[in-house]
Image (cartoon, rainbow, N blue to C red):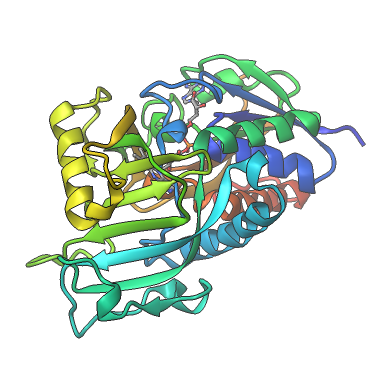
Length: 362
Ligand code: FAD
């Protein structure tokens, strides 16, 4: 049987994970990743290299919780078996709040993340009234993106650099399936133009600190609003496996500015040091800044789009093309990557295995 030809548009964490998983777990696919940007590049148009990144779940959506759970299991495995190659390490997360409300609802992962518990009063920093701790992972995005790309190439995948203005541009005479993983660009890509997609600007400061296996975040309890306790801007510190530590953060909806702002950077550092003054090594007056960064989280009203639809080919043949979508991952593209890709591949196989002639959307 001849192989199905798949074009994956996008080489961020979504495209690379989907393409790699497709080659790894399925037979009979010839996969090419076509993208404007690939690992190794730093530009505001390409979100994945700018992530912190850690696994810290903020969501209530059950489908996404399932994506994140499967991804964390996968990341724990990678951290144990290939830590240097993947840049993933197991850490203790400390999540703090400035207030403790009696109506605190345990997060969905409390029964799932090892070591989950409430912090004791004596374990809390000065301006913190409540906190939880659990085991999770941090991911060094540069290392992990390289790992995914190398794995994909070793499995026989192909890559090509190109920018498409319309999803139809990805369809060549032998194309059977197109997988759209264009992140924020799904807002403008012809044939997709998803008006629900919008940017959430995030600024970070990368500093050099002694190695640590602790990640922490600090959140003011929402007052007078119905945002959940995990929503809204958070101050955070995320260590990487190479001595770099990411300080954050900001969360500004519909802000497309990709130039770092020194005033914001200063306020991030102040916020981090206010919660954890011990971040500054003894005898050091200032943090050693390695670089500043800004990324645009590809958020989407209605959540991640993991869907498949048939479209008519414009090549004038009697052939329909299956177009699958995997975008809109907002601030959780790493922690949902593996589970979302698994789900997409299952969706993709359903219509391919079906004899039905008309499947428009499901
Ligand atoms: P992208 O990485 O943007 O990739 C899109 C790809 O599509 C690129 O290769 C691009 O070139 C290509 N492309 C787009 N349009 C076209 C076109 N027309 N033609 C050809 N190619 C095209 N997530 C976590 O899980 N944990 C975290 O701790 C975390 N922290 C974050 C901190 C910050 C400051 C930011 C900004 C994000 C953070 N995220 C985090 C979110 C995460 O980075 C994103 O959700 C994720 O990177 C999105 O990946 P993506 O592959 O969907 O998009």
